[in-house]
Length: 367
Image (cartoon, rainbow, N blue to C red; front, side):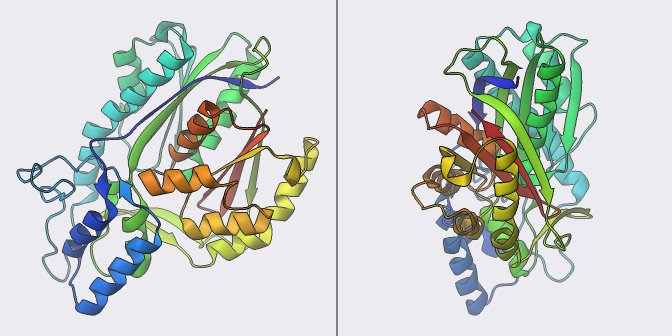
């Protein structure tokens, strides 16, 4: 028995901001020199992102002329000591702007599943880019018309693989109670955490992260149709000697991410042995996997997974496409991938993989 995916919905804010435009805006956040501008342009091209979305793109008096300017919130760098808006200011924007995005994705998932909101028994929310209490879960409860007694759970600060952690929780609920109906919603406003100053590692994060939300409706798979997508297993592994390879920490001026150049090498070294072991537990080998949903944490991460598992670029076409169109939305991104693969009728079994602070791998097997 597993979890049946009954519905999926995704949402992004506003119109897409071209990556070339985002690079121009980014020069306002540090002291510029010709060398730094050239490096910035190179870094933004290296991401393979062509457009991204931000909740801030249509705010401010000059929004109509310059979509993506962020001028009302991310003012131009004012000199040494300027680190941009405080964490309090960023969290106030999160509290205002995250719920509408989460609502939009959740409504689409419920519509896709043809499930009445009042019949849901569990709500799982996921986010690592902001917090408030009462939070997004309470807004969803009230605005969607969920039962006041619905069981709520929150997955916080798990990073890009957070939705896979949420899927594990949802699967536990439906396996424990075949009548359970779960709404899972991941929402991230990563662009609220733009870093001020010149630090190439932080600038890579500025260049690749974006905003989005995705939701999934899950029910027990005991009576599901043969064509239904079912999550039948989850896996998790902390890679050795990797605690500082990827971090995500709260600071006075937003959340700061570190992404070591070691990450791709760690994936190349450790991902395949663990994948082979985990898949074997479920009667599979890597060549028997029909489709892959690899979280596009960046082009080097996708390339590392392809190298480790001996996958060609066509096999990871969906991951590269989502990276190109949306950037890295953190936790919702894996659900964007699953939605596209499901709509395309992708070959199963599907393996979904995400990477997060730790350095951790999270996985889901979908049959």
